[in-house]
Image 1 (cartoon, rainbow, N blue to C red):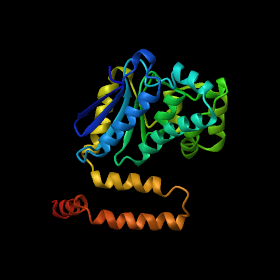
Image 2: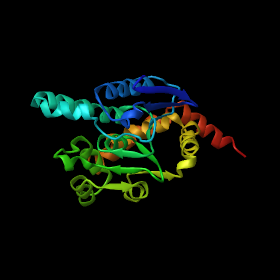
Image 3: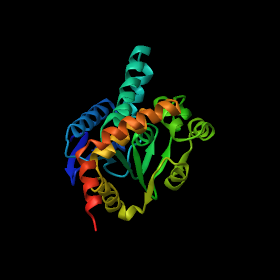
Length: 252
């Protein structure tokens, strides 16, 4: 059985974590094929979005037992390489051209919650559960902290990371960690409808916007606006913009 199911439907790549018997827990093999799937989708110019979801009852429960056992016996150099392997996955999600959407059902815990947090957009069922429980076993959700801190303020980030409690999809939405919460029984259809929007707006504009949004992090307001001016000029030169302006000017 493949660790990842890769499908393309309606200009969207669907990447399904396929370890349902392990609650889609992350290991080296799953991380590797997920990276491969993201790179494959990134090379497909016809795609407008990527959805990451989980097979079975849960989205992703974090690292599996074998991975945790390996960590406890690794040297520092081995653990650093292992941590950077996950870091590369999170960074790849941001570097992929099109929106990467996490479709979360069941539990998204530890590394699974980190995976969802690393995505551009998070959609969840109303029964989904989230959490960063690593602190309970003396571990630190270290790489995702950089992303979480960009989503939330210091105090709420500190609470989530150092208390390790689970929280609901509605709570996650109120925090700003989830974009939309849908009923569990209509979730797949709701996700497809949400994703379909990216087939109706300008693909080049979305790609440029994603690049700009993440590219201005840490810049001064002047530098960020200057970057925006460059992207604005680039957008004007695209075929999407030229066609869009022509339609606007010619409408009744």
